Amino acid sequence: MDEMKTTPIDIEKTVGFLLAKAYQRACLIFKEHFDEHELTPQQFGLLGFLWREDGLSQSLLSAKSQIDRTTMGGLIDRLEKEGLVVRKTDPGDRRAYRICLTEKGKALEPVLAPIALRAQAMFIAKLDPQEVETLTNLLEKIRH
Image 1: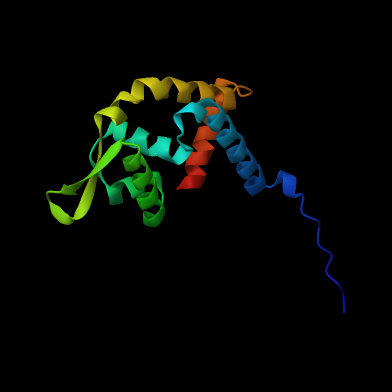
Image 2: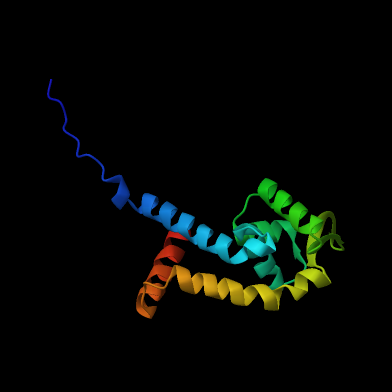
């Protein structure tokens, strides 16, 4: 019987490995910049969606952020505990909730948005603008 020879995989050059390591680096940079605000990247992301469109339903927020419903519930619980959001019954569907920013949650946007931009600038500092555009387009393609 002939044994098939396989080429060893160069794991450090695989897209999955590189994406995972880039994500870890992004999270580390985010954590360094946001440490005093005690927010995770996912919590900040949810606030970002709500700053753009306050009062999204929990299911729409889950779909937009591509976070499963169980995880979403925990994230909202923590933001609610911090006094940044409140759940309000959806007038169109009493079984659904709308997630609404509190005044404290709204007031964080002008504080946190510049920090997020600085963290992102640090993350992509080695790329030129064309490379950032290409990377963004490629990631969008993979995501969908």
